[in-house]
Length: 162
Image 1 (tube, rainbow, N blue to C red):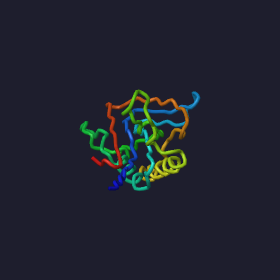
Image 2 (cartoon, rainbow, N blue to C red; image 1 turned 90 degrees about the vertical axis):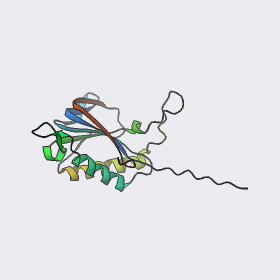
Image 3 (cartoon, rainbow, N blue to C red; image 1 turned 60 degrees about the vertical axis):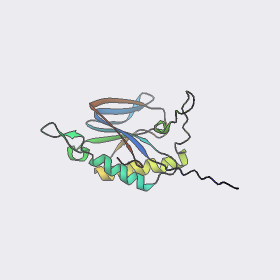
């Protein structure tokens, strides 16, 4: 008897969104991106991600009603408030901590795959938002500063569309 096993692996693009009063990113003590009121978005890209993941996430991010209206109810999107967005690449969103104490990042996309998707995500997000999006630098060691508003923090996964 011969058994053939197939591992079906479904990839997902992942983001952590934090509502911010302000946020900035520095490389070697020099600010390279900053926003005032808006969203700080950490983006994790996995092997197998594609344009459909980008489209779903960017549309969701700019339309998510997580800003307060005049009654204090979270009923407005970042687009409706005129807010800004800062995007930071974050491969550690795909850390596996199953074994031992050192996380494995094997699920994170390699730079050849991730960089074009990262750039596509930024371009698509800018189009959906209707203005330029601030960014960090892919693969760089960065210092991220945030004044969280709320705090409001959400996790979105393009394969687990809850």
